[in-house]
Amino acid sequence: MPTTMEQDIVATPQLAAQWARVRGRLQQEFGEVEYRSWLRQMTLVGLDGDEITVHLPTRFLRDWVRSRYGDRINSLWHAENPAVRRVDIRFGQATGPISGAQDGLGESLAPPPIAPPPMAPPLPVGRGRERNGEPRSELNAALDPRFTFDGFVVGKPNEFAYACARRVAEKPSSAGFNPLFLYGGVGLGKTHLMHAIAWELRNHEAGGAYPVTVAYMSAEKFMYRFITALRSQSTMEFKEQHRSVDVLMVDDLQFLIGKDNTQEEFFHTFNALVDAGKQIVVSADKSPSDLSGLEDRLRTRLSCGMVADLHATTFELRISILAAKAQIAGVPVPEKVMEFLAHKITSNVRELEGALNRLLAQANLFGRPVTLEATQEVLHDILKAYERRVSIDEIQRKVAEHYNMRLTDMFSARRARNVARPRQVAMYLAKQLTSRSLPEIGRKFGNRDHTTVMHAVSRVGQLIEVDPAFAEDVELLRRMLEGGMA
Ligand code: ADP
Ligand code: MG
Image (cartoon, rainbow, N blue to C red; front, top):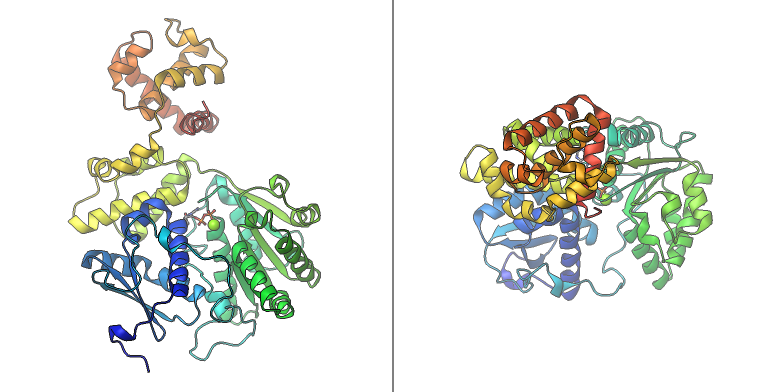
């Protein structure tokens, strides 16, 4: 009988490897900023019966991590090691047998080469419920409770993918939607939509609408299970398991590139399921045709259902997402702050969310209202990282090129509209992307007055509001400049 006494807590190299993977997942899912702010200081004490104990160095961190990440840490642990049923997050120093996580990101605990898992793979396929009344464990696999359709903010860049996902969740295996192939850059909501489909199907089932068996896993996990099955000579079992589900979802398929055996196995699984009228949902970072290294026959099959992409976010979508998340958190965030964040953090939703969470945490911690000043202060380090040093020269060059005007007209006195407007855009971008003051910017544009720059900034701002094509143009320029493609 395990007791709660420290000496009975077990910590093995296997546990350390699992912990490293859990941490890796957390880092991947919540982004660098959030991970470093809250999760990095967790240290693993060990396993006691079915309970994992994790330490954090302050009470505040403990409470914060418990309330915001507790469920997720739980489900990730359970997915890694089905024997783990609870994670106890405690306040304490790193006296446990497995620590060493404070330095960097737990590199010292890098996962070992693939080895058979200590437990049976967590993919039972029966339709029944487990004894304790919890839903089947393949659905426990690591579904994030926040990743629902309700929690997904829809805008132009993602409305198509959203609609397709909804459709599949409502009516799996409908003609034209099988397979559903979702693709897009990192942090744009692919995993969120896949989890949302799984939750929705699970709700249907709970409501007794129809029974469906859903398996959701990363391509990495698929491969891991497959290789494990090969080693333990249980490939028949593997095949049976994966081919008897109603809906198979494989996330981040690009991971299978170059893994020929696994790709082959996936291809067969895929065919068996589609032939049996079962639904497949796959995500990847590129479209099927751009996934080089994918076998042609698999590429063909992947493209023959519905291919939907998640586009880079627009300013409007970023604002809506911030507003939605601030509302959920119940913390008032001024419009100015949201605009500031939406302007500065354009890379993806994950980073945007990370920045907002950090802001909200500070507001909670110090009981201070969220203001623009506080935002700049709290996010100082992130914003600096985002501020790739874009020079005004670079901006002028890129904008002139984009609008097909002579560079010298950036400095000239000409006021013809086809010259004046791009010049205003360049001034606007100079204000947004550099830390130069208005007079400094004016000087760079043929010694213009700072009021001229101010006017340009507000004029372009207005146009962005009313003219979507213009807004898109400016957004594109911004991205090119920020992304270093200038
Ligand atoms: P991907 O799998 O494409 O890399 P994720 O689905 O993991 O991205 O999304 C990253 C984070 O951003 C998640 O926390 C997710 O909830 C959030 N997110 C992405 N798109 C949206 C959206 N449209 N509305 C709300 N949250 C979103
Ligand atoms: Mg993902």
